Each structure stands twice: as C-alpha cells, then as structure tokens.
Length: 138
Image 1 (tube, rainbow, N blue to C red):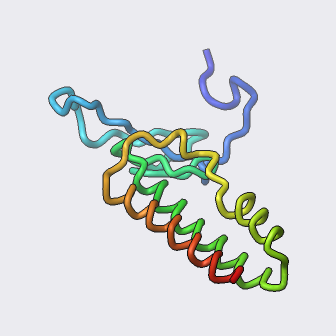
Image 2: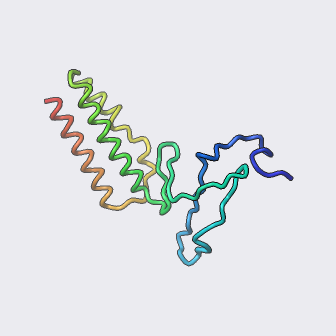
Image 3: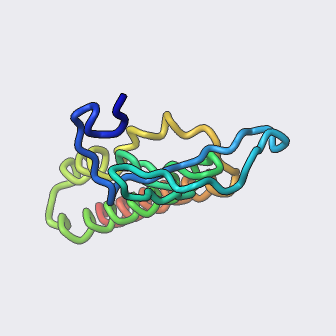
C-alpha cells in the first residue's frame, strides 16, 4: 500500500508545512525531547515550537500569551492607522470605524491559558486606545 500525498492525490507545500510536538501535561510521561525528521515527498519537515495558523499563534506550552501579545500589537497598529488616516471624519463615523476596525476580537473566546501580566497589558492597551480615540474626537 502506498503512503504519502500521491496516494491521496493531494499536493502539499513542504515549505509552509511544519511539525509540532505537543508535550504531555504530566512531565513524567515525556518519552523523548527530540524526534527523527519527518519527511513529506522526500523533503524533511521542520519541528517548531510555535507557528501561525489562520492568524493565531499556537505555541509549544499551550499558552495564549504570544497570541494575546500579537493582538495587542495589532490593536495599537489599527488604532494609530485610524487616527492618522481619518482625522477629518465625524464623531459617529470614527466611533463606528473604531468598533468595527479596531475592536474586532473574534478570537478571544479561544484564549484560555494566559498569565495575569499579559491580561493586564491587554486591559491597559484597550484603555490607552480608548483614550487616544477620545483625544481625537475632542
């Protein structure tokens, strides 16, 4: 029986494909820390500790802190972009754009493992961008 992408008639991009090993929660059940290279179409795939999938960062320790930090950077970026480009818009337009463009947190329901420090940074970020928006309106 043939194995691989030819057997299922599927093309895989070996440049974008990576391997990720999720360690067990119980540290006593770790069998190995390094693994032999996995090959796809005779190309060895990289083992990574974190990768981006559908815009979310999935990390080795199952923590959402890197994904939350990415969202904090994006929130500041989007708010600054709104502040620079749309200074002549009316109050209602700025508020509507801020809610739809800056505060689009469709993924926060997935966050479950994070520390108090990154949570406080997120709260501070939201407070800062609200202050920036109110300064622009006033």
